[in-house]
Image (cartoon, one colour):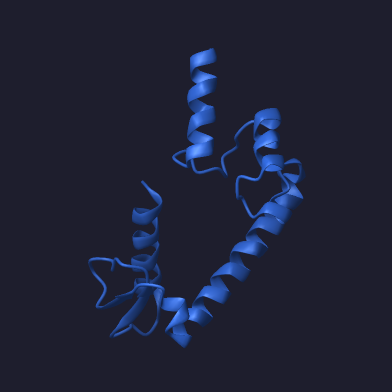
Length: 120
């Protein structure tokens, strides 16, 4: 599943899990999940306070998840790079490998997996 499909699936699951079902949703981007009524807003965090607030909450949540992962896997420095492919992070992947927390379709990870397979 690519990142867009994963995002749309996550939005659908989140909306369906709410105790009060939303009548209308705003989504930051240009695509709406199929089963959700609402509007996709390109650059939504710059034009909607609701989307901007949700964006801040999402980034703070991601940062906490990355800090927690970094406690278990300090060699990847996730507390400093949030999973972005910094040179230090790519070097750590090359040295320590790819674990279950990596998205295997993410280009830097996919390229390394293909390289490991061709070297075997």
